Image (cartoon, rainbow over all chains, first blue to last red; front, side, top):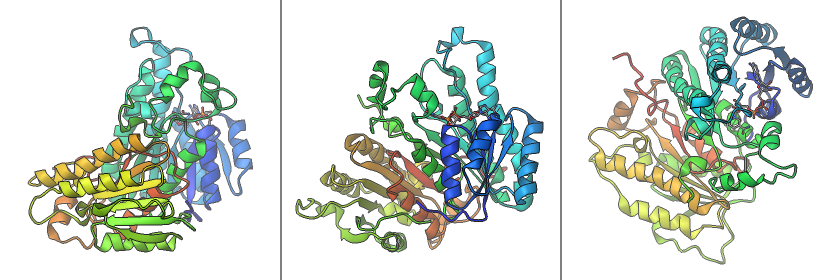
Amino acid sequence: MRADLSGQVIFVTGGAGGIGRATSHLLAANGASVVVADINEDGARAVAGELPGAIAVRMDVRNPEDAERAVQAAVAKFGKIDVLVNNAGVNTFKDRVEIDRFPKEEWHRIVGIDLDGLYVVSQAALQPMVAQGHGRIINIASVVGVTALRLQCAFAAAKAGIIHLTRAMALELGSKGILVNSLAPGSVLTEGTRQLFYGEDGSFRAQMAGFMNHIPLGRPAYVEEIAEGILFLSAPQNSYMTGHLLMVDGGWTAGYMF
Amino acid sequence: MNIDLKGKIALIGGAQGQLTAGIREALAANGATIFDIDPAAQDASPDAPDPFLLVLVSEGANGLPAIDRGNSAERLAFSNAVRAYAGRVKRVVMIMSAAGLVPVKGFSEFSADQASLVSMTRSLAMDLAPATVVNAVAVGACEGDDGIASSRFMKHTGVKRAATLEEIIAAVLFAADPDNGYMTGHTLAVDGGWAVGYARDF
Ligand SMILES: NC(=O)c1ccc[n+]([C@@H]2O[C@H](COP(=O)([O-])OP(=O)(O)OC[C@H]3O[C@@H](n4cnc5c(N)ncnc54)[C@H](O)[C@@H]3O)[C@@H](O)[C@H]2O)c1
């Protein structure tokens, strides 16, 4: 898809990561000025350096002062923010255990970044959006927020929280000209998931074969396919969709494959 | 917004009306060669070139009926039409009413019928994967709908207006988009937030 995003300012949190980088590239290729925001400052700089007219800002989504400073930097540079993509997020890789043993620090770290951080950054970005009388927020959830999986209780709760927060935000902000949607990626091939689940050639580790059987398309997503959904949610013509959860999951939540 | 359908064949069938006409026009503008089909008379000819896209428009996409009714014949025709092209078509898009997402009071037959298309989309997505992705677009209040549809939907529509045809067509184009290959079994709600929850302060 091609969308005309020229003149649009798009703020991507977690912009240095797998999905964030692909999204920044696709939005910029469609004409947007991109603000690459990440706690990983070098990573954000590197991505912004690949794109014409993009800027990098360091921020921890948990920190309201960081969020305000980053929003002010974007407004100082471009005069506005049209679209916020709340994409920064973490999951647990080491503590894959049941909730009765799930470490409290891990719970607070994950919910703190994935859910609280999304509220903090949204509130900061809404200041210019409400004043402008238009804006869009795109919240990156996960298939795990829709269908529960074992051994990642904090991530499941945070992502389900994002999906419902999206709906509540849509109802509150619709009359202010702001559309709020979420997108649930299924399993996506990134550096992180490659190390955890997939071999170098994209093949699955043994335990992943069973997992892939549950996905009708039988493979993980490429980051570009997730970015395509974010582009659609940003497209000026797609202006009657709000509160929606866009599933880009290879059919994972369509039903049980066996 | 455009998608690249140059050199690709699109089949479209089902209910006629302003939306179907608009979709046909948009697909052509994006490069597709379009053939109208009758979903009730589908036995895909083995000689015809493979279509890229199959679009099926439910009567429900044209708004709430004057009198509550469902349409199981339409459902059967759609299911047969999709199966006739299994393995040959890359994208299937069904278009229906947002009453399939949240039922409308007084329209039990209609709501159940439209919900069945949402469910059928999910089921066919599993059956036809990975060769074909199957998705749907659920339409809320739309400009040009008369009275009842708009007023029923509008009460709980967050953005407080009906959709333009272009806004609905944008979702159809996304579902048909050759670059959008990992979405399947999904129903896109183009309803201004209607299916989300209470848009008013009581
Ligand atoms: N990869 C998948 O399979 C998958 C599946 C479903 C959902 N998601 C979601 O997609 C989003 C992006 O994931 P990804 O796969 O690209 O991951 P990633 O780890 O490649 O990228 C995440 C980025 O967020 C940044 N980040 C982490 N904590 C931060 C903080 N406190 N403040 C600011 N930035 C912070 C990281 O530095 C990193 O650049 C996440 O919300 C994730 O939960 C990913």
